[in-house]
Image (tube, rainbow, N blue to C red; front, side):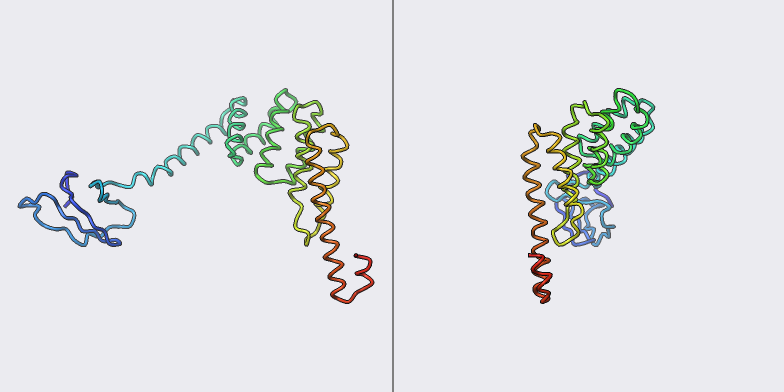
Length: 238
């Protein structure tokens, strides 16, 4: 039996997967209580406060939206309009949907090579890699960008970002410090070649932090020698 009107439903109590329905209007045919109605979890739900019996369409909405967005993205990927692809790639980047922007920009790098839009594509390509936290590859492309487009308005930013990516890869003092040395060298190069940049003070602060990390590593290593009673090595370390 299924109530045909929402007014037929007065109160509903649920206990795990069992429901008991009391009807508000009792007719000769409906004057009864349906008990122990077995429901498959998640099939539908009752709304006691509103008195509505409905399917959980709200739970399906995210899935529908996902399917729609995937369908839309596939249309962008298959489009032959390169300008439209670039527009959507930038839109995805600004929305921080880097995994969607990356395939489009990677394709457009080849399509726009040698054109006026190559600079824009390459800039967003490097920025997208940074957004994806692929700092090593992003550092390479940032450096390649400012060397390829020295007159670009993004040249100063990309030169800084190339060094900054190495800084982000610098690990804790207790680990290998190859990226720390690399970051210091790249930041110092940026300061030397962009001495008038407003980012120079930030570079100096970062280099001080990295040098402090190297000092901490050297101190901890010397102290370890001291604890091992390797005093000659400890003296050199200190």
